[in-house]
Amino acid sequence: MIKLSEKRLLELKNKFKGKRIAVIGDMMLDIYFWGDVKRISPEAPVPVVEVENEFFRFGGAANCALNIASLGGKPEPVGVIGYDNFGTIFSSLLSESQICSKGIIIDEARPTTAKTRVIAGNQHVVRIDKESKQNINSDLNKKILNHLKTIIDSVDGIILQDYNKGVLNESLIEKIIELANKKKVLVTVDPKFNNFFAYKNVTVFKPNRKEAEDVLGMKIKSDGDVSKAGKILFEKLKAKNVLLTLGEGGIAVFEKGKLEKRMPTKARKVADVSGAGDTVISTLTIALAAGANIIEASYLANYAGGIVCEEVGIVPIQLDKLFNTIIRENK
View (cartoon, rainbow, N blue to C red):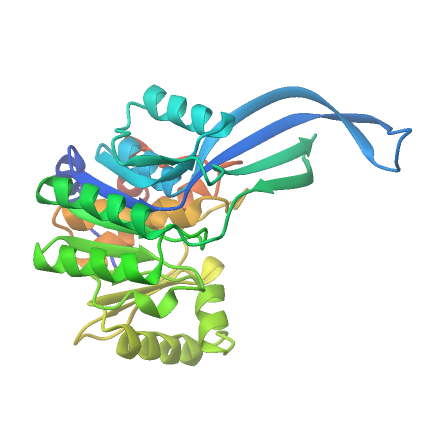
């Protein structure tokens, strides 16, 4: 049973403040149309949603940046958006959230990745995705790498948040990790299928159960399966740590030269798992940057993921809520 003292928790909480974390990856805009259905369309047998509310939220790597900000850190998002209406909205959200936009590159040839959800009452009616999954070109690769070089001496950590939308490609991934390791900056990875084994020699590699199953071609059901998967990933990726998230099964932490550790899930009542992965990698990274060891950082990240799963919609974890919840439950 892992438990941190109140003194240690408060010490880490204070060290979260001001930590500068670069978040590199697929920037997204989440759009919500909420309304009600009272009739069927005369044009086709589909419901007519009468929209009562619409709002915009950060998604993907941008949600990681928002989580870093809400945890008291200073995010440095680095990615690509389009020269379009959704890009304008994305930029205005950065401004409203007081998040640095210097690392956001506008590319006229690509759309801003946007996911529009239409919800009637509590029923998700449809999702509309607008995106490009093509790898960014060499010019954009160069711009991202050059921007990282200008900020790397001032950042405390780097998150590589991959949603397979083309920003993180094999060439760029290798160069980012090489630069970070040369500068001794910690790197954490939230991977997806396409580039899974390109993320070698990072500080923490954090796949979820499904991602690991898809890549390894095996079902991860029993404790033995978890151990086997973790061992394979460790050997293939040469990561300092592998953190395998298991949904309701909690998380498994594999640390170089040490025994595997398990932590049960901290979600009391799961309302929505959307964005939980972004919260986990963000909390984990800022905790490591604040001086936590991998077990302490995983413990905090596990709690943070559980808390946001209790909220409906994609919401960031708040610094006070995270630490107050842990301190209260530890008592």
